[in-house]
Image (cartoon, rainbow, N blue to C red):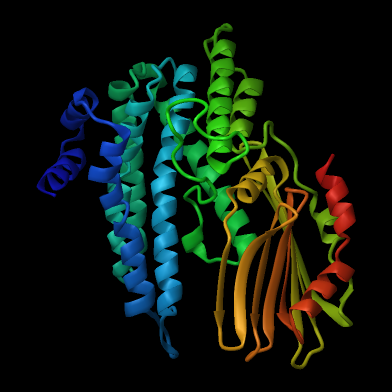
Length: 415
């Protein structure tokens, strides 16, 4: 423990001197995880659990709100697992991008770079325990981790000085885009809160270093294949950089970003008017009382979403949501093959995430309140979700099936 504390102190206080020592020392992937990542990555999830479950959130005039203990515990464990995977995915991205910025590829050094640069962000996770200042501490930690990455790349990946800023920026943006899209999809399909997102949650885990160890159709085998595709796209970007000016072509960068997000190439999400057309004027006999839609883009990738509320103005209300992942639809495929399934029950209710015909489905029903949720992935591109008052889960399923043209979404997903 003293060694870990000393390393964390030095990387935060004297990073310029510490990065050469990190690059030179002998280590292994297992050793880095066991002695550093596994410990520091737990700080944020544990702080989140204490804050949401034991301390609670103070709501003006309403009192303190606390998450159910077991819900908080599951959230902590899942968030911790996603954090362990996230740092490995970040290392894959750093290593795949290396040739594009005149740097040397080395998977172990890339993992060192990702892990030790994350030190500030991980430690800042403790800030969740502090009211008011917590978000500022988290933001400061994230910013300092970006600075640590900037200092690391010339030492660990042998990045030329004139390409360090670009390498840092593309690495960070690639990782943020990937994790953000995973969070959006996870939250949309599985009805989870922020704890679910942002950390590469659908990746099955670190891949082995030797080819052929996993079956190609298994989650780990597909993740290994994804890593190889990112590497190949990085090589093509490197080749395109041999053109006058030494900068990769926009097409090569677009291909690389598409490979990173699992889509293969950038693509468009449905326009606002088109995605709104999937929300009918009436649903299960209820008139539509509210309709909204938005379309967001980053680095050529788009997601669009439409939401509608249906109500009788009294006690019954249904909400319908359609999400199009557009050019990042490959991430929904990752969600499917990851095969994440869970089920829990309580008196008069249940929650279940499971696969139906290879697609992820989310169900939640509470008989005491008469409120449920039902969501599914369509064509590995769209997610559709209905929630609200009903006589039972079958009524929600029937309302969604009658209200949304699933066959039309499946046809669009094949285009």
